Length: 197
Image (tube, rainbow, N blue to C red):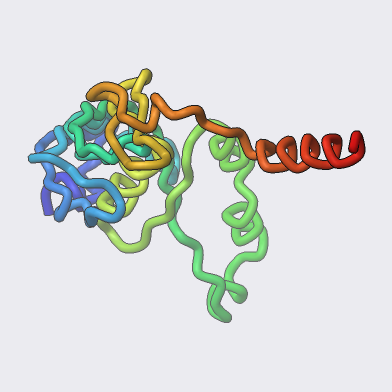
């Protein structure tokens, strides 16, 4: 029970407010997904309109990242709003097919679902409880940067010696760096010199 598995019957006409602090383990996050430092503060508001459950809220916390340029570990604040929709999963069984055909069509193609999918992420539930952990886990992963940087002006590592350029220049910077076509230029000069002789 608790914040991750609210009972659907507890969502009244006024809605249901949930809040608390969740660890990465409770959300099902691994270090390969996102490394959460401490806990994530979660505040959610659940509302039911007809058979659809709307979940809005915010999540805040700190994530451990590794800079893609200099490979340093750093902590980054995480804060985002979420807005998702839950629909009851419709099982297509032989018994459901024998029920009222018009009702089945209405459930299979509700007109509001397509509109909601454009703005809100759509999830499905079964039973009399929602399982919010998979949705929250997915939202944390989706808001993580693809290429985390410790700072926007991170200089990264030297391509030759691996020195962290944020700490100052390395000795490789003094040497002239030939471009990828330097060998071709040298060969061209040799051919010109040979042709003059």
